[in-house]
Length: 424
Image (cartoon, rainbow, N blue to C red; front, top):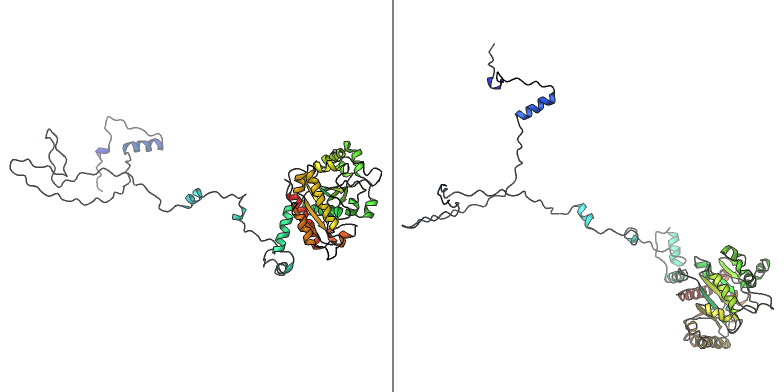
C-alpha cells in the first residue's frame, strides 16, 4: 500500500490554534475569505482597427538631428524613457459601451405616439354608419323583401319629410307663443290652429298648448275633440281658469282646466255670449305667464279682427304670427290689410316675420288666379304656405290628421316647421 505524504503547506502551523466552526454558514464564510471570487468583466466588442500606414523612413543628413517618428511618443526632457521602435502603435483608449438604437419602432412606441381617439364625439371611427330605413315606395318594398339586406336609403321625398320633422322637433330654450289671426271669419283660422297644434304634438317631445282667445264664442276645443266629446267633458273655460288662477301652482292643478286632444292640450274659450268678450289684455297676459311655466310652445286662436280688448296683450306676448287668408279676392285683400295694420301700429317685426296661410276652404273656381294672389301676398311676409281644399277642413267639424289628405298634412308640417324656425 503506497504511503501518503501529507501536504505540509496546507497544515496549520504548530503554534496556531485551529479555529472550530460552529455552523455551516461560518465555514462557508471562511472559505470565501480564503478564496475570494474575482469578477471577470464581460468582453466588449471593439470596432476593427484601421490598418496602420507605414511611415516612410527619412534618413537624416549629416549635422541634423533625426526627426521623431510620428507614431512614437515624444521623449521626456530628462531622457530616462527609451525611444520605442518605429513600428510602435500607441494603444487606443478603451471604447465606451456601444449605444444600441432601435431601427424600427415597437408596437408600444406606436401606441404611445398615436393620438387617443375620442370615443364620444367620434363614434363613427369605430361603428359603421347605418343608412336610414326607407319607408314606402319601391325602396321600402325592396328593403322589406330582402330583410334589410338591400338598403337603398330613403328617397328624396322621405329625406324632405325627415328634415321637416327635425325642424319641428327642435329643442327650445324657453316658452314661445304664436298668434293666429285674421280680419275675416270663415277662412280657416281655427282649423289651421288645430291642424298645426296636432302636428306639433305629433313631432315634438313636449306637448303644445292651444288657447282659445276668440271673443265671439270660439269653437277651438270642439274642432279638436268633436262636438259630442266636448259636451260630455267638464265645462272648464278660460274664465274658470282666471277665477282660480291664484291657486294654480303646478301642472297637475292646471290640468283641471285643460282639455286634451291626444298630446295637444287646450284651454276652451268662453261660450256664454254675455261674458265671451270680457277677456282683457291684462287677463290674457296672466294666462300667458302661467302657460309659459309649463309649455314651450303655445298657439293662440285670436278670433276675427285685431282691435278687440285682449288683442293688445296677445300681440305684446306673441313671438310670431300666422295670418289666415283665402283664395277669394276679399280674403287676400284683408290679409294684406292685416299686415299693413300691424306694420303701422308698432308691430312691424311681427308683420315682416309673419307666415301667411292661404286655405282653399271654399274651392274657388278656375276664374280665380291663385298664382297671382300668392305672388301678391308673398312679398310682404316671411313665408306663404297654401293649404289645398280638403273636406276634413272645409266641413267645419272635427279636424283629425288621420282623415286629411297627404297634401294637407304636408302643408301643416310646413307651417309648424316655419313657426318653430321663427323662435329665436
